[in-house]
Length: 231
Image (cartoon, rainbow, N blue to C red):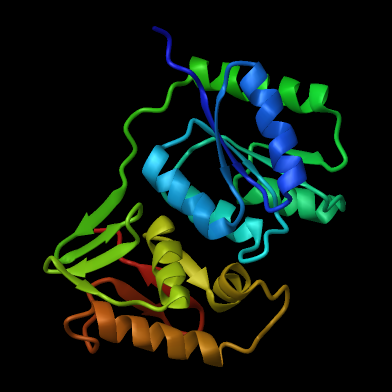
């Protein structure tokens, strides 16, 4: 028996999500529907969908944050279905890792065609087992369970600290400037105010480094930014 393609719809407008879900089921797709960012991430972790349709204007999370978070550990095709129609928002979503972008209101035929394109690409390049855990020395990060462990003991990071850590790991070996990090984490386009960043980075270091005077992971590039050790 051929396995059905499993599609996760993350959309807080029930009329739209029901409309899309019914149409997808008629095309013999397996469908999951989440009405918030939190439930979307839960369904992603628990049901391992093949493809995600993602609204950006969710009530609890910005869809752009979800794209960025998922791209830290997953290559799942993401099709943005959003009322945000400005060019800069489309560019931002695609630059963060979305595979396609369709603006509401949309024609269902066009959405189905774009899904078929994503499915064909998926079949040409099937997902291999993804590495869901980063591990180096005594530090481990389980991306799926959102757990950070030191010597196999779980530690608590605030959401900002966790995002900082993922950003650093994703770019390990590269020097990230203060401005770049502020933009990626807080979304400010232009800001030379790095005071908050220094505070959060110091807290993160205290939590993951055994010796903050001689850090193993987060290295300071004086006057420039930070670098996560790549070995």
